[in-house]
Image (tube, rainbow, N blue to C red):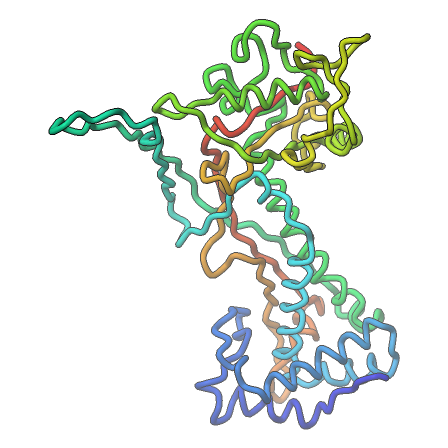
Length: 406
């Protein structure tokens, strides 16, 4: 059944909110210049009913109802309709953004910042060493706690999408129907790409973060005699990566316990990674490594309980040198020592949609619907804004291999 909008009743009620006695308590979504302001009027049940009517109507238009499309276009000619329709698009943008799977948070901690100024993230290392004996009436020995600081600032990202008035009229709003999903995907992609740029460069894994000095690369210098250099992804290579991560110590010289890890690979290694993690058994040599000949053990694949596979399509795009062979191991960020953090501006933690206010005025006066376009070209302009930032933090919770074997 097609739901239609009683435009006369709904828009008349909306007019009360915008210019009548309720305007102080029930505010617009968009001011004349497109600014988003407080949504206290969302609590008004009358506005919610009107908004629900518009959303149902818009869904019917997207479903191909000609009757709904005609009603919708007639409604759009009413100057006040823009405020309800703006809320519909804004909610659809957020809905599309939230349905896109988040991947970066499996390897990075989510943070929040107050403004665009540089923020510091402090960490404490130490104080977890084994307690020493204290003799009778003897003083307790003080132990050092090392503090560290990491800084970053969030930045603004965005884009503008122009749509012609003819497109809106001729395509029965299909262009606007696709807009929220497209912008939601763009915002999520921005987050994923930004997170990857923290630890990936055009020449391979970030050489400052992944280094011999940080002891988080795979080679004999870090892992000891017999450890290969940058091994390809395999059970043996993963064994060395987990060995190296497990040998990291805190400032007291004590072990850093890692309960679960994330194996991050490019699409080219997706099959290999999932075959390793999802195999039912592992054929292993008695002393570790791949089993050969009669020197084999058949063991249940315990890796599936410790390792989560993440396929990151940005890796070969950002790393143009060995992006199809390089692989990474991260400790899950919930353990308290995240390898990195991705932060968002408080109050602006999701993408926001804006509309250009028209610069035209009707002969005789009166508001002009933004969907009518600007004065010069009949152009309709939407803009999306997203604010994100981040930093690398603890290199002890990550290991990387270029996968080149050298």
